[in-house]
Length: 348
Image (cartoon, one colour):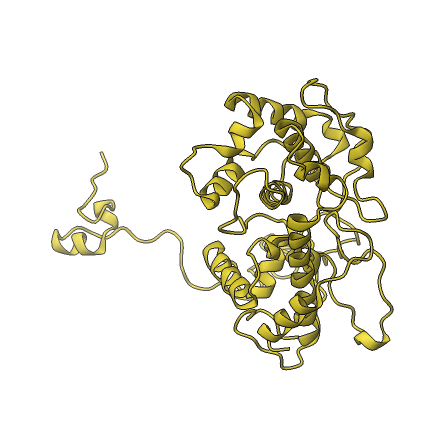
C-alpha cells in the first residue's frame, strides 16, 4: 500500500521525509540531463540510430491554419495626442476627425430633419408600433450606400399589425445590416416573439417607467441579443429610436466587445483592449470634442472599414463609397464647424 508524506509525495520519493525517517530515496527513473547531440551507439545506420527527418514541405498558399491580417496604417509622422494614444499618424487622426464630425452631423440631422424613411419613423402622427417596426427593419437590414439607402426596406416592408414578415430574399443588407438571406426570417420571428413577451414593442423598449434613458438603453441592448441581431444593428436601432423621439434612450457606453469593426477601431485608436478603459477613453474623446458618445459608433466603423492608402492625400483620387452614410443622402458631408472643433480637440 503506497504511503504519502506530509508533502503529498510518495514517502520514498520525498527527499525531506526519507532523510528524516532514514528511508532509502528511490532513484529517479528519467534523467533531467540535457540530451547529447552525439549519435547513439551503433553508429550510422545501426540499430540505435535514428533516421534523419525529411525537411518539412512549405505550406501551400491558401492552406488552412492561422491567418494574419495586416491592417494598413498611416506612417508614423510624430503625431501624438492623449485622446487617441493609439494613433501615431496625423493622416489617420484627420480621417478619424472627419468621421466623427460626419457621424455627429448625422445625429443632428436625425433629430431635426430626418431623411428618407427615418422621417416616417419620426412622424408623431403615425402609430407607435408601426413606426417602431419600421425603425427595426431599417436597422436590421441596414441602409444601403447609394442614391436610395432605403430602397430594399421600402420594397420588402410589411405592417406590424398584419403579422406578416418581409420576404427575406427581398431584403438587401447594407454595410452595417445584420440580415443574412440564408437565415431566412428567424431573426424577424425572434423579434416579434421578444416584443410579444412584453405585450408590445413600446413596452419592451420602455421597460420600467422609472429607468433613466441610459439604463433603458443598456437594458434594451442586452435584451435585443436575438439570433442574428449583431452588436452594430442593435446599437444603431436604439440610437435612432432615441434621436427620432420615439423613446427616451441615451447610450452610456459603446457596448464594445467581440470582433466587430467598431470594437477593433476603438482598440486601434485608443491603444488598449480592456473594455472598461476603452469606454472611459471614448467618453473622454467625446467630451473633449463636445460630441454625443453615440457619434463614435458610426465614426469608428467607417474609420476602421477604410484604412488609409500609402499615397499622400493630395495625390490620391477620391474613393467611391468610402463611407457608410447611415441613411444620409448620397454626397453628404460633415458640418464645417463640427469638423473644425474635432480637429482642434485632436491637435490638428
